[in-house]
Length: 267
Ligand SMILES: Nc1ncnc2c1ncn2[C@@H]1O[C@H](COP(=O)(O)OP(=O)(O)O)[C@@H](O)[C@H]1O
Ligand SMILES: [Mg+2]
Image (cartoon, rainbow, N blue to C red):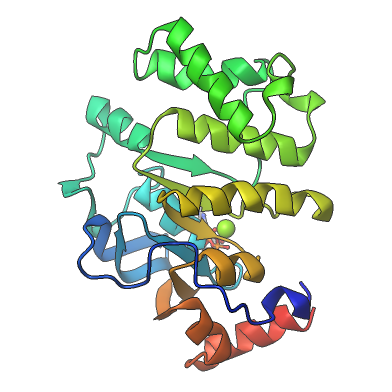
């Protein structure tokens, strides 16, 4: 992380404007509590993400960012509270849950592609199995998505034959293939060699511009400044601060946020 990453940008965020109350809520968490044994990892989380909004989640390691993403996708059950997607309470299991998972894409730090399937098969599998898309149509759409993320020429290779940056772009294409209402990104560039970070962030920025609803856990402050409508700062399982990116970076209010920014900006 360098100081250049956070030099002020004059451009407006590429999303569609923070805190616009006229926009429809898409993901709503209310009173969400989650424990791992004695550890209270999500504390009374209240969060509304609107359609087309890009929310960047920041916070120190162990603050609950991944658990928050996993809870939204029901990969992790919650103890109390409610999470709704497009007005519908998240189902606990069964077919309704499979549909919900299709509605919320997820991109992880480790690319999580199927190692023994080709890039093309990685993209078409979900649409064919879950959405019952005809194989020919799934393939055509997959190729268009691979084109869009710049790896169409790798379609018949196996994941291990691609660079990390290419694999992560495939993971984004795979999420898009399910035509999700939102995509959650959990540190999508943290496992990448530095020279590959921007190729992935560029794809994410173009998605943001197109109006995709995104929750992005990242330490890429340049991305947060450029693409976020809103920054959420988490510490010890709580949302401690919530602000537009310029406001958050130039004027963090809490000591914990100041401390966090101080640490990441000096490295
Ligand atoms: N499956 C689990 N079992 C027990 N503790 C967990 C589990 N997953 C995460 N934790 C703990 O919950 C806290 C929050 O973790 P996490 O959501 O991964 O934080 P972050 O993504 O912000 O680094 C950490 O203290 C972590 O050790
Ligand atoms: Mg994490």
